Image (tube, rainbow, N blue to C red; front, side, top):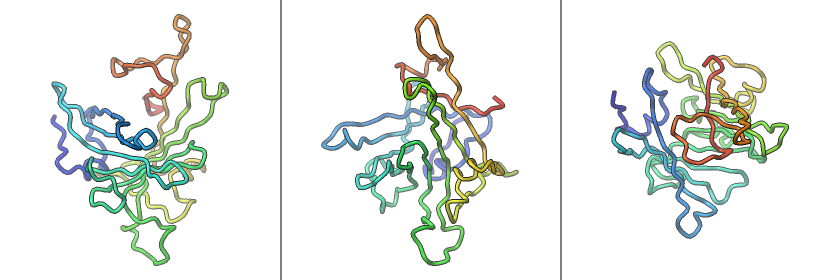
Length: 218
């Protein structure tokens, strides 16, 4: 079935339809004055016969102490105050833990008792673990996302403090209403003297950044 992407903002934050494979491709644009330091990333949906449909754009914010990326549904407007701003990705100081937010209000930056519906949602959290081989071996990654309710809608996670975040829930083994995913462990190949994974033609270049995310039951 053809995937409906008429409403990009709604499509970006809703769970993928059951029984449908959503194929996307990320491209990085390093052209321009400062894009070597602050490249722009584009996410496209891949259709049949090589057709592509734009979905999202992201760019690293310049005046940020940690890695902080704005996410927009307009490739020409990557501003925090723009109408197309739908979320952001933020990392910790070490660059080992990341959280994806929607465009709601940060509870730490407001003093008023806001309605819960205006607080920002956490859409995903990613945690890298260093392995015994340091950065030379395969990386271990955990991805934590909100679960789904009986109506196949994403459970709303709107933390009011650090103890309610996706990462805190995961670290405290509180996995109610969340789904934990991991990267598939590569296998050592004696012939090539490297770790390998079968990407079924989706990968064109060997890289430690190539990964597959799976559920433990898969």
